[in-house]
Image 1: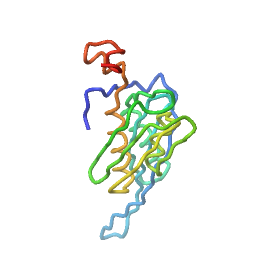
Image 2 (image 1 turned 90 degrees about the vertical axis):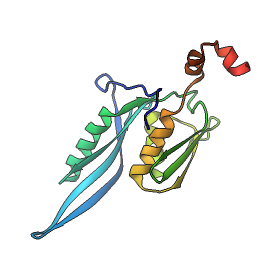
Image 3 (image 1 turned 90 degrees about the horizontal axis):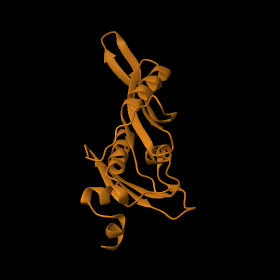
Amino acid sequence: MTSKNIKRVKSSEIEFKDRVVSIQRVTKVTKGGRTFSFSAVIVVGNEQGVVGYGLGKANEVTSAIAKGIDDAKKHLIRVPILKGTLPHEQYGRYSGARVFIKPATPGTGVIAGGAMRAVLESVGVKDVLAKSKGSSNPHSVVKATIDALTQLRDAKTIAQLRGVSLDTVFNG
């Protein structure tokens, strides 16, 4: 999942909105009985191209969510957004989850399922078509969506990498 175009972002200067993707109650059976704890997958974003995800585990739901938010703020990436949609279509994968995201015309909205919708809305994408294939595990779907978003590159970045002008990227 490591990519050369991942741009790390400092969380201190940005205002984030957090979304709870899933909360799981986990049971550990010991000789003294059952011990319950909670794990929460959280997505944070500023809806202007910065997004991150985190996992929090604790004995209470609120503590798990707080830990997840802190973890998400440590794993932020910047995503190129072009006129409210994505620059190009992209596949992403993580474990058994496969996702496909595709730019859409203005007015389409976010056509995506649960975990993918949370990530795409947190990024700030307004129009996108998305399909999740394979595993529907929220952990894996979130990570696969983040993988697809990290692989996105805008025309300006490609022009700089190739050492050519923007016109050459589109026409040449």
